[in-house]
Length: 245
Image 1 (cartoon, one colour):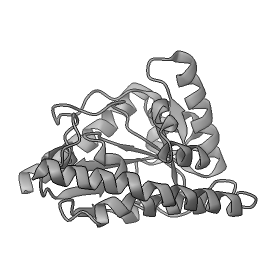
Image 2 (cartoon, rainbow, N blue to C red):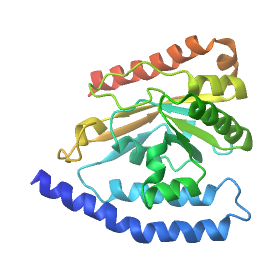
Image 3 (cartoon, one colour):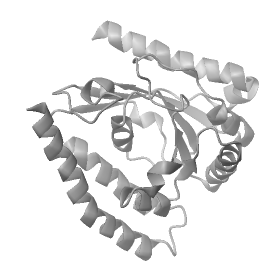
């Protein structure tokens, strides 16, 4: 039954992406002349992605601390990474941000085209030139008034335990004097494991937005210490939530 349910769900994703991609192109064409940061298109994209968790009763999502992301302010948003599903649930925040994402995803028909229209930022793993370009684009994006969303582990954890954080998010926060928002994701690896596309039955999912790490703290630490500090904040919240479950 899980296999059948998974096939139905992914067919729904593919089929629904066709009209939603058309809607995205229309919204982009109408709003691009006056909405340079693509805020309206991104809000539509939040709806598009959220549609798949809203309509799937196996994925009840709880958002806590959303008010910590203050509208009109710019942040580097960082979260732990467990599953492909993390991307969908992060859109449930309905906040203005640009993703840093694998360059390969931008080539996916429909979804990838929409990412390009949104001015999300591609990254080729291990490619120094791509990393340098990502940093440049991210810092320009922050200075333009849009937040950046990034998984500092770089890839999904296969064990459920956090990997070491890469320094890029913390370098850009320091270079642009931008506050950091740590975000904790729980439950997505149970709902959709890092390997495979078979849905695993009903699993509650939670997204907890922690208070910001203010600019004063960002500036006072080295990149290495800042990375370790934010990782500890996320790890401590994961442990606290697991203990109280």
